[in-house]
Length: 248
Image (cartoon, rainbow, N blue to C red; front, side, top):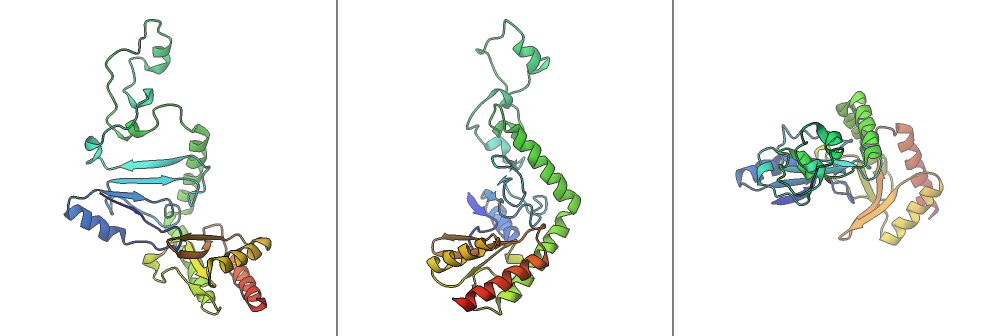
């Protein structure tokens, strides 16, 4: 099995998932994908790019509440997976449904159970985060109304604008330049992590919300451009960066 994140959360690198998918398919290797830093920003079609398992939380680029996401399992691998936990929603509905079942006095938990065959068997099996699911559904509806391809193109235009502006400043761009290797994250650095944190804090004081993220010494100031951002937002960020760097 190969487990990957489609977009790295510190430097914004988006990997070549189609190539990795082909490699895994040719060698009979399972491909397990974490897509939380891509979905909602850059489309990913599992019919065109087959994966075995894909998971994503909804609280990042999908703009949904915390604590709710989704899991995709390829039908071909579903029979090979063992159930890690069990709950009443993982098994086949009883005759008449659960409402009638719970009202039947002769009901006993000691019996033979038949688990559902689809991906629902891998949910929690009990009470789910229903308010979170409502929020996630509303967010997905908005994304589909706006159009995933239109969102992606808007993000690319914003990040192109940002990269061009950063080239005029004394900063290092950590994120790869090619569109096929980036999504909505652009990471820059002015030096050591401590210097990046200080600059981040000064930007946040001016209501420009960026973050500093590192892993294995890779990272810097992370800028996340999404469909609700505008070219004016990018210009404002670049202008503040220019002013702060000149004053330092």
